[in-house]
Length: 128
Image: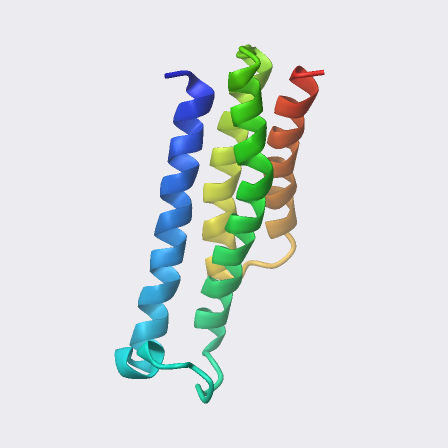
């Protein structure tokens, strides 16, 4: 398996962890029974629960960019230093982004976000 595909696997695991983390903190906040229903009349989530949801959604949105790029590069037989570095940068940036987002640290979160986007751009440009 190429490094890029390994990074794709790691990013899928990270996505699952972030979704599961949000589900866990939501259950702890609201209770399992209210969440098992329609969720129409839930109270407002805590700041942390809302942040965990936004983090999970943000990761899923970024996967929409990363997954097809890695798969397209793999299908084209392109694996080089640039695609490897781009995939590794994406995964590392997303881990750092998750920590920063959950901690609520202002101003540096966009740096981690755009570092991941830059990793995706590296893969895309390597295919041109």
